[in-house]
Length: 68
Image 1 (tube, rainbow, N blue to C red):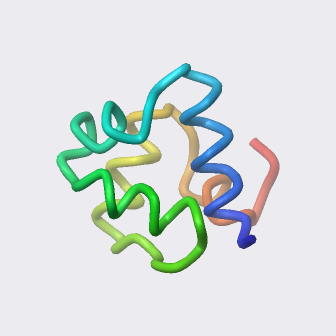
Image 2 (cartoon, rainbow, N blue to C red):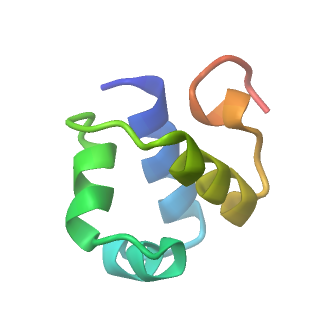
């Protein structure tokens, strides 16, 4: 599994969110969340920005370039 997939799943579970709840918050489908978390698809840059903002983390953290 890639760093983004692992970290997205970790952040979602840390907030005790279901995939559907996160999908609604990010304005994407539940299927997209599943694809991202399983490493089958990567988010667009605009989705990365939205995810980083939602979880209050950096894009570098999301993609595994740093640990915070």
